[in-house]
Length: 223
Image 1 (cartoon, rainbow, N blue to C red):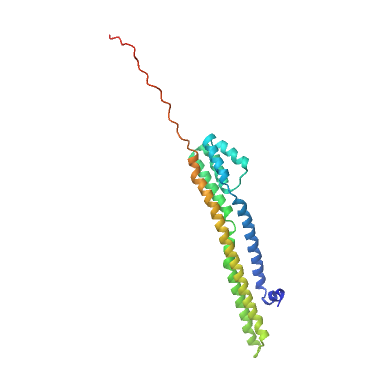
Image 2 (image 1 turned 45 degrees about the vertical axis):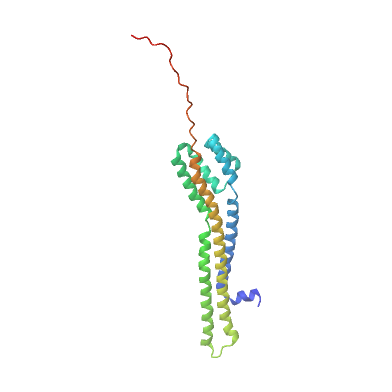
């Protein structure tokens, strides 16, 4: 039995599983590409920004970020905090919190859809299994001595749909976990910048220069 005959024997529900599998593969490949770009190391850029902040202030650090053109989440959070640094630490922290929320949505986009596909796939396969078994039992109501070929039609439909649903679920589940691991790694570097940036803005206080004590050796005139 070739692939076309196999798909035909599985019934119309298998085509739903095929469409779902195409969507899962497309979404997984797309998200791997996006996270690959977002996951580029920003360590060197962040170190330069930190040095510029300590030496020349937030504006110089912002200029360094603009020159580098970094679009990684850690750089986006740093840019948000530095752009509000002149308004105080609370404003910088609030801007970074908002940036983290936006970047989290960008990092974890599509994971819920893959999780839904991992749950729906086996259910669709189970539905196809039930339909196939019902067709097999209907054969007994139509004839008293069904042939092996008549029974095999419903049984093959049931088993093929079961296998198709499990395959979709496995692919979606594995892709979701791999993507979540990558997103968590990127989010960790982003959170580190959010926690460390306020300390970059605090410049060490230089001790005031001491002046030598002056003693008045002029003779005092008593009244």
